[in-house]
Image 1 (spheres, rainbow, N blue to C red):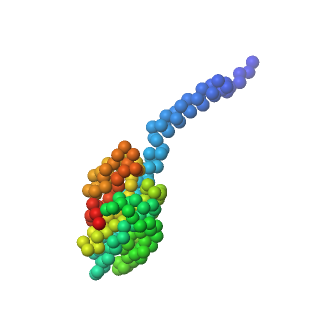
Image 2 (cartoon, helix red, strand yellow):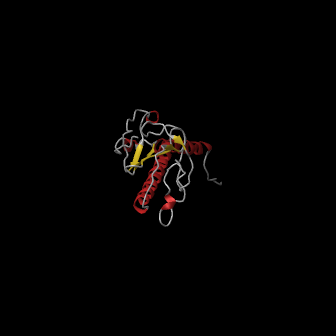
Image 3 (cartoon, rainbow, N blue to C red):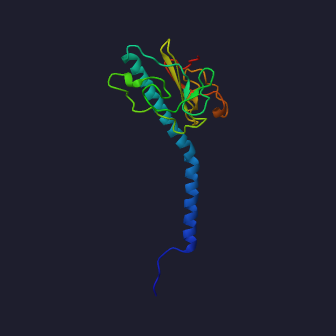
Length: 185
């Protein structure tokens, strides 16, 4: 008499069903859409910090710095700056003609960033914006964050566009950084 070893069809189906339930539970718990939104917000924080540092270096390094006064946005027209209307400019040049109107190439040794970054999503709802007060040598950079985890940073950043409703994409709610995050021209 010989005994064959193996799994029955029922046993295999039970194991597959259990694995399916576990996989669904992991997806629900991890929420990949929210994790991707948090990753894009991390990119936004890094991009704005790099630009802010580059402009700060420009202000200390250049004898007669010019920050420009055109309110620029990388995509769309709403930007959360002053009157909320910006000029579309998605140029990434650091020579002053990009969406940040500062000639970073004038820094001794050249621009600390090779090109101006664009928002990871860069659509009408999620984009970068820049404005400056050339007289006071102050500036503001804006981005809208999309993850629930970072939502409070838009209301506590010291800026003036911090009215976040239930769906903050449709309201006046931006993450604002710079030397004057509440800049209103």
